Amino acid sequence: MKRSEVNAYIKEAEGIFASYGFLLPEFASWSAEDFAANRESCAEIFDCKLGWDVTDFGSDDYLNCGLLLFTLRNGIANSAKYSKPYAEKIMLVKPGQVTPMHCHYRKQEDIINRGGGKLVFKLHSDDNGKPGSGKVSVAMDGRMLTVDSGSTIIVPPGCSLTLTPGVFHTFYAEIGGKPVVTGEVSSVNDDDNDNCFAEPRKRFPGLEEDVEPYRLLVADY
Ligand SMILES: [Fe+2]
Image (cartoon, rainbow, N blue to C red; front, side, top):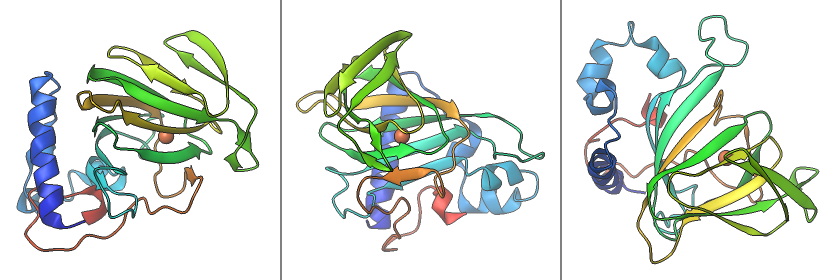
């Protein structure tokens, strides 16, 4: 992706999040100079990778395979300094924009439709680190669902799915509908080591630096 595209998608997301009343912390609008001036006092932001994150998973096709995220809070496993056992993100998922099939080795996450269109999930069981064909169980807001691998589950606004480690999942916003303001509440998040993609993907592909950053990304820290 080009930095100019990332800048435009962040500006768009800022407007959409605000229109749903989801307000971001102050550092969401910091400049690179603000981050530099606060590097010591805000070590948690850098070390726990809080903030903006825009990825096309290396697809070079962001609108069909990509995700925009802002990590609001996070900890580090087995860290005395950053002992939060939980994480929270807000994300923007566009119609037909797929987050590729993956599972997590350790993280348990609730993916929450906080408004907009419907979220569409496809789930698979785990077959030795690859999507399997067995039954798979998830809870939708406390109601246990057991479905065949490959099944589609629709998550409407207000609803959420609880994904336990090893459950393969892919999701997108319903085609023809609105973008979905999507929350994530989870155990600690470690995007460097805890994503098991079904096919080779880059979680943090590099950018083509054609303009200055509008906001820094966690990958810029
Ligand atoms: Fe996930």
